[in-house]
Length: 221
Image (tube, rainbow, N blue to C red; front, side, top):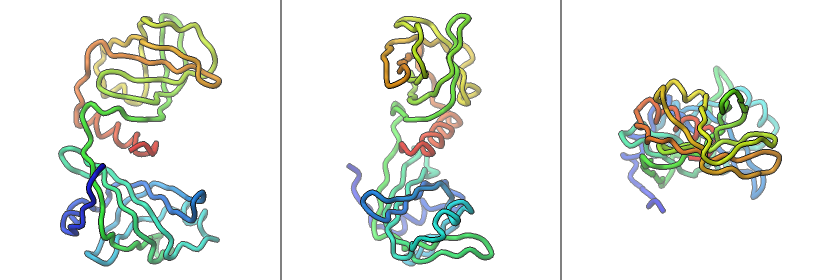
């Protein structure tokens, strides 16, 4: 478990303008609202300023948010691509000249470096090709050694089949990437397909950035 950091200088270095974050406002044990946005800026020991998207303002217009707890998670622009997270409370919001949310500067925060071999939970539309057949589904898991897909419906898919996968990650992967099914099991109204890459891929900076952003938007990091 990451050890909380109380050094405000360290936090200032991480909270860069335009940093993408996932915000969760906690109204109660089973009552929360989440949205993605960006950091605008911060003032040491006083507040952090974040952009308040139009949809979030509209959804929260009838709710009291001042002094409500809020959790921020984001991907830092560091060599290892650290995940930053902290909990604090809302000071106020403004809608003019544009939507902004003022939150208290946190007393402590945690960071976690992202491991190169980590598995990332995603939710990306994908198409799996097996011979002349194609199956539309979602890429739900990714690592440098393999991935997993969820394919709606029941299909004749078997272990050891060689397949090809197309998704928004494809331009960042080797063109001749060989994939083989290692597991197939029914899950709900579809099939969960485990896939291995016959050769581990290189986690380039561009691929890592794309995967982190996709995993972040899926709420898994």
